[in-house]
Amino acid sequence: MSVPRRFLPSIASLRALEALDRLGSASAAANELSLTQGAVSRQIQALERQLGFDLALRDGKTLTLTPEAEAYAVEIREALQRIAQATVQLQSLPLAGSLNLAILPAFGMRWLMPRLPEFSRRHPDVTINMSTRLAPFNFAAESFDAAIHFGHADWPGTEALLLKHERLLPVCAPELCAKPNEVTPEQIRKMPLLHIQTRPRAWADWFARQDIAIDTSLGGTIHDQFSTINQAALHGLGVALMPDYLIEQDLATGRLVALHPEPQDIGGAYYLVWPQSKARNPALVMFRDWLAGQAQPEDPLPR
Image 1 (cartoon, one colour):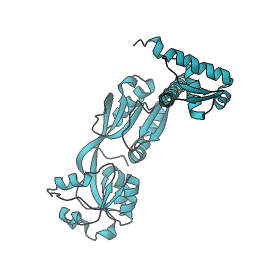
Image 2: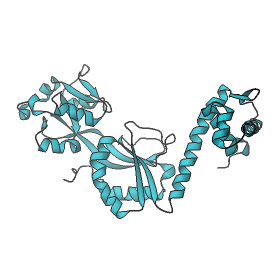
Image 3: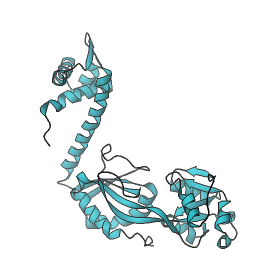
Image 4: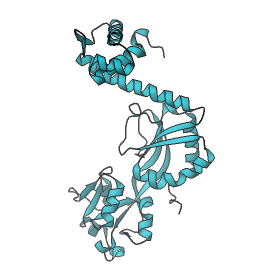
């Protein structure tokens, strides 16, 4: 793709604009960029000539960006950050490949982390940098090479690898239910329910699988992460609908009891997702190929 020169201002001019917007004065921008105030002013003038309109209001030696220039500077700041991050990543490649990965907190800690030592043994030169994200995001706005996320693999402009279907089981503390094996779905409906913010329809879908129609909103408390809803269930605050891989130990030790014979798939799965533009990233290719061998949607987490 060839971009006309008039749409590609010099990096020096863009850095001057970004610094002036962020720092609020030409003197502060000049100090950060190791320039004189006059040089900063000339960079802004050069950018104005190229774009064909004014970017700054001038009062003596004072430069004040116009509202349009301030909005432009916000976009430029993001672009400069991405250029810097891409440069750092490229410089690190001769020593070791790197992969910037977004993960869901619970799934990342309980499913991915136990498996990562094997990847590290196989690929010691690949560094995986991880950050947690609870909600889907735009790959164009955040500098991730891939993400492990929950959903239906429908992000535009991406490719995906299925890792595991989510299978849910209603559980609670033993003191909340003396005879868990005898509890019916109708009785669960009347118990205090714990909801997870990222699965707003989970309970309604689970009851639908039990042929129980829900014609009113389900009451109960809402939690933003599985770690908090798990603690709420452990302390007897209600019944939680939890993924099976998260509660195996609590069920085995008796800290939680199951109120249904088997976990059920009510829709949705965990995927490794990556932008099509990064599909040939060497570190991503190694990680994806290795993770494909770990993707066993119906198998329980190794004990």
